[in-house]
Length: 453
Image (tube, rainbow, N blue to C red; front, side, top):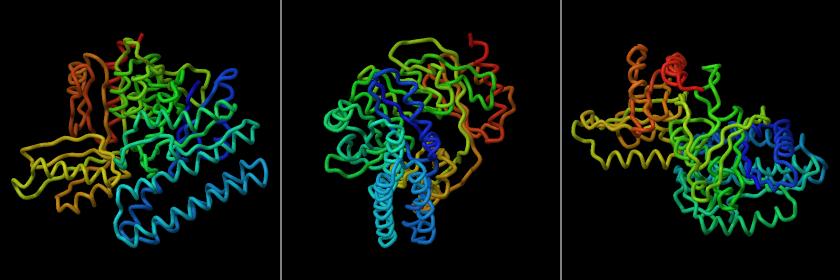
């Protein structure tokens, strides 16, 4: 059995969903049981989070108009995929029900003037609950038996840590056996919602941003799959971003530990938590390219393998510096409260650095979360300084710290802040985004290229 996960770009529209069906059929082999896990269509989750925050701030017009556009976008896909009027009607009714529920929730948030983590998860889960029925319909239109599965309907069981829920292995094992296994036995392709789960009481939770990869790993481990495949738009994990370094090479094999370190440092093709559930069951993970399915991609397993250092770069970030502004007013409790409030607001803190002598902390967040981070800190009556247009460049691999620091020394780059991971992992550098591409090329030449076979 193979569990295949497709991201927001892969399911962004009717044509892309048809391509997903073809990719599954052409790559899974003869008589291979397949479970498909999907993200929301591209941009949908960001739009939902923006609507929820606008509702919490009482900005009614900001979210009402946006929902109309989102609903029409999904209805258009349903009509384009429909194999028959009756089926189209059923899926469109589902879309209407989901948006009616969403509007009611946002209206409640606006009336109360409070956006709780539980309510935010309910809103954020909507995109996947809309995408899965559409992709399932694309399979049926191609003559493949398929049904959508909401992972929040007793399949992926989690704790009640809204926004960053932790799966319950026993509950999820039972959920997959009762909900997914019977479908596979009938020859169906289950299309499961990524990113979301539910508490034992059925309350919807989310697994953190980018959690669809994590969902695929959770399901793959619970089902004891032969492999989990994550499809994206690159051939796997490369020694650098090929858009910046055209001669970057695919790393054919990584250990779980090495891949986890790269994911934690921002490798776009892999969510940081994805490796965890797979280690327990020793389920291999393969990263493949939707646009180049014949390529074997990167295999991640429990087998150790030497590999060249990888340069991981991430742009569109904002460095948020938060200080008490009251001399000695900063305490560990204020730090904990700040991070807790960021989590409750659905803000993913990518890097955290504390400076005792500056009475504050620096948080690295995505550019999309900049305004929310500023408002969250301001609500705590803290002084906030924003440095937008930031990027990270991470050098990951054994024994890379010395050559990386030497290369930084002669690069003339404007380093905003730097963080050292473990001795065997590497270095994370925060720089202005405009300086990121030349720094990646410089580090790849100085640190990685010499070790590429």
